[in-house]
Length: 198
Ligand SMILES: Nc1nc2c(c(=O)[nH]1)N[C@H]1C(S)=C(S)[C@@H](COP(=O)(O)O)O[C@H]1N2
Ligand SMILES: [Mo]
Image (spheres, rainbow, N blue to C red):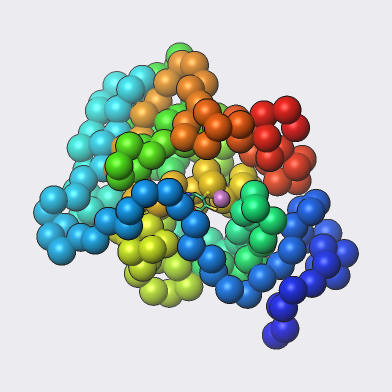
């Protein structure tokens, strides 16, 4: 199948406004790519407004039911990549196990080196929201977020934190790294929510 550079109209409503389809998989981030030789040194902290804060090993994460989801990536810089198959665990299953308190309305995702992004709790709990460990049948590469990244396909791809290390449930909506630099607090590509003023 041919998916070269095409105009949005060619994808019959499948591609959000002002996006162009690419078949490549660009690598975009700030900071350094972490390389893990010893997975015993990795963990995922789930905390904030929860009844049961958790410190999960990679094995603990993989013990949750595995889901597979096929969806499209929409990067705020203008490229979209169609038909990505991700395997991982559902964000909502992690939230349920932690027992998210009533007062929680937002989530901060914490990555390596202190990089953060924020999203509304409802977006985190969406059926398609995954914490993923494979892409198109292969373990994530270090550049694309090994061992675990968020995948929130209904939001611009910057919300899909690579190298995820912490999930914090909060009452208020605290802007993350890009959000403090003018990017949208929600980032719905279908509504063209790129910057704060969109
Ligand atoms: N930890 C971390 N995750 C991140 C970023 C980052 O800088 N650090 N950049 C985001 C941005 S802006 C994009 S577009 C996607 C890119 O993911 P990719 O490199 O797998 O294409 O990762 C997102 N997740
Ligand atoms: Mo991005």
